[in-house]
Image (cartoon, rainbow, N blue to C red; front, side):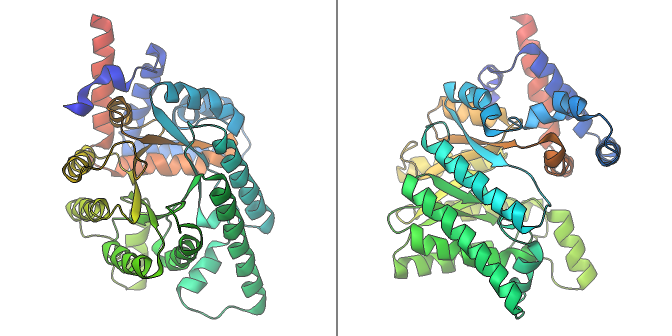
Length: 387
């Protein structure tokens, strides 16, 4: 099978890289260990204990490209030799002030310029709450009236979006906008649509994100599709299963509303595959970035592409995985000439920790993900010993 070739999957990993990866996934495989590790790490960082070196040598270097964009270049170049592109993802989370939002804007613009110079970097990316306060997105989603000062603040958020999308269009670099929690997402979606109307006239430059553990997303996409046909713009979408499941279910339960999350893993998988198929059937007006670590969904996509005669290289369909995970999918796809990009997080070690902790917790909650990684790493270690 396509994804079983561990020699291709781990060609870039030295023996010690393999050992580290095995050790890390072994840790992540244990939920109690993840909980303890998270608590200890948070405490050590808050108490300013000298743990950055240790974090850097283990979890950070496995899942991140470096501290700065320049830092990431060796990793970017190395992966590109094997046909795998990168999406530089400035993964500093949870800081909410105007200075930080302006910094994220400048950072994203810098990455777009950076990407323009390197074919290994086909996309730039940002999170909605990197450009504005969560509570503000939430208030607009809840259709509450803004105060005059909040309205001014929202105008600044729109201006940041406007600026970054305009630079992306000028330099012809595609721009991914990540998805977040459902109770602020409507405002983010409306803003992303506004950008598509303006900047996606010729082709998809701006890509929004659909989190398909939400059961309402295919209907949302179909409505957007009708709008795009009427108004003559292209849709760019990144499809993912989603990152905030426990949080979403918990909030729905506490506040007594119907959970926006599919009832189980199977329903999510079906929703993902159906939405992906819908987009692949309408590539005349849609471009998609299939963000998945799921082998079945990936094989389905390849199948549909073949049936529909969609070329692997025309830029309408990209596959994406996170750096440090699912190399067996990324590198084997690239080896067959499909377009593949790894999300490559970077930023100061301390500031990227919330992101890394979320990743570890997510991995723990996705049944089978970690054990599959471990099985493949074990297989490759064995293959090398015999070789």
